[in-house]
Length: 224
Image (cartoon, rainbow, N blue to C red; front, top):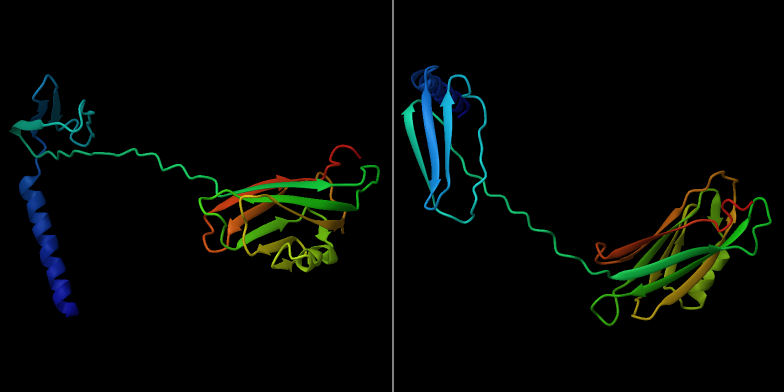
């Protein structure tokens, strides 16, 4: 089987070489005319000096009926291309989320404790959402106070939580059209200069494309 494939390949290459030998000419001179039934006419002249140059023209009316004619001697390749530029459908926002970090005051240097306040809302077409996940990224140098996160579970505000050094993940059984307020505390573990905003993302557990994103930062940036 392998030998047969190799023989077929050799025969095909020989045929292509023979075709190129027969059709190649450096003396070709061809004029291609594209015309519509109205007033549009465009001529393309192909000779040895420009035979490797792509020549193109936009058709004035699409869809439309056009006639292609050629005259002269030589080989040319004529192609029409139709491109669609359809904007993607606008996606309605499924969730809304707002996040703020609050401090009892900005007199400490550094501020060692912040309250992360989250307001979340479902804005989709159903009465209630599926299970919802909220990923809260920590500000650099801050870690979550676990007891304040677990308190949300005890008060039935969330179904469960996952706590890592740099991330708190909250699971809600569902969200409705009314806003839900959640909060927990974080504390400074390491002092970091020039704090950058942290990201909070809310999304549908089963349809992760349905999501919203917000940022937050220390309220004392530039005040210490």
